[in-house]
Length: 105
Image (cartoon, rainbow, N blue to C red; front, side, top):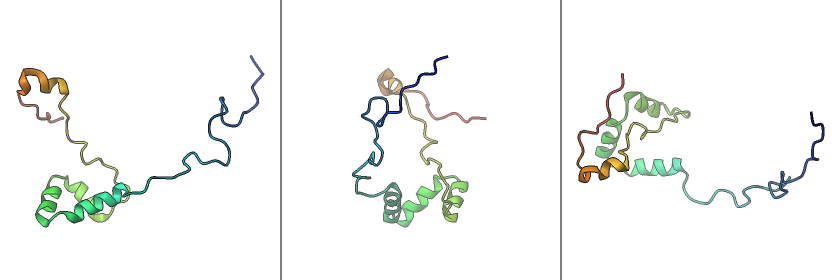
């Protein structure tokens, strides 16, 4: 067993890492809208018809949580979409059989 250890070096093993008292992000987050502000502005810009269509595409549980103001709602609303692999698009000149997602039991 080796009992020898190098003395702790500021800035990590190379000495070029984070130093005590120095921020790793000195300029901070770039100015601009947060995702929450962007989503709020997007939804506010929709007319009533578009809002109804948007809500109809969500599960009733998700709509209920949105109405309740659930701050811990982290569901990705686009997670239910199934991407089509690029290779499948290029086969047969883009003509494919039904690629709709299969219902999982």
